[in-house]
Image 1 (spheres, chains in turn blue, purple, orange, cyan):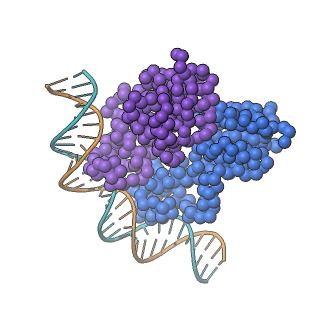
Image 2: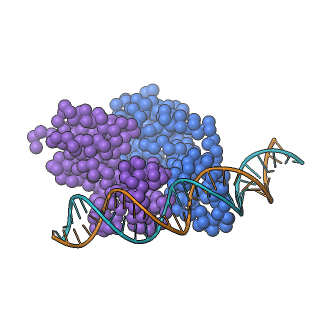
Image 3: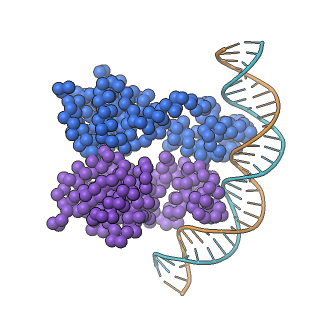
Length: 211
Length: 211
DNA sequence: GTTCGCATCAATCGTTCGGTTGAGTTCCGA
DNA sequence: TCGGAACTCAACCGAACGATTGATGCGAAC
């Protein structure tokens, strides 16, 4: 362990970047070689600088978002490890990051030692998950949670536009009775009992997206 | 300006706290006298320590949330200024903080100089608002009768949790009739005719956030 | 000192929603 | 070929929702 671990910080908040920098500069075995505010800049740095671990925020106001950047980075030849560092532990974010090739997923409320340990794990190619994250992933895998059928997702998507049952039926060329049947199944699978709760739950789980 | 400005940092993220600390320690005219992770701890510190400005995060995983803490702090005798520092600029967050007595409202993606300037403004008793925040508030004041009232935003926020009218009335200690009246106004102002459409419209406009 | 916005409550009424039960189709895999 | 999952439809009913009308108190603005 002669050479320090070379890190790249990607976060759109100056406050967070300087906090991370301070945190890692305490360790003589780590070196922050650059810090940038978005995905494009991260890729640019990686083009001409050797980096072992990228600390990646997911939500970035403008520019390339974290998931996209992670996907791009991990598809590079001889890529650095990407350790996602975010404030959200929602299923949608976690799954998206893991699917994009993230080596680890930590929450920003983690204590400094945990973060440093996670960076070292990531550098060694090991998966590093925060405690909450690990349990959440585990829950998900253990109980498939009754996956929604394609038709049900379609209903949910339109439901989130604020359509009534009648409007839904017209949009999908089915009867209102069928719409209601689908809704019953959706409510059941999501563990809710009305359409508004269904929408927020679906958004949280990443089943649908708003916008 | 002999004595440095005494600051208290309240944020549940160690990373952010150390980032803020680093940011303010660069200025010899500011001094971080303590940093804590939740509202209760903040109040405890204030009991025996003189502080001029409190840097307050709104979202804190456990313990007293930022709005409540702000309300408590500003109701103290000879209270310090509370400068809210968060990542969200939705009407719901901003209005709640202002109602609670916050002196300023800044976003975490603000550059260091802006943050330091905001702290000084707050210490002088002046309101300090981030650019996006200011324009949001400005829009409201410019068009009264069209923008949602604080109460309406509050209703909307709970509505997005999937609560029924009855549940809303219980949560807010008002009658179901009043809830319905608010909903009528909300629907009217948002140009929708049901609660699900109201939620998605409010999310899209940044009036509330999901999660 | 009156107007206006805001928040509160009440009563009524038609509509929509959600729960229940039951049943027909197709299609795929065991 | 049998069974199950997915999608479809129907009828019923109580509960929740949304629209309407009307009313009170309060504070800030003008």
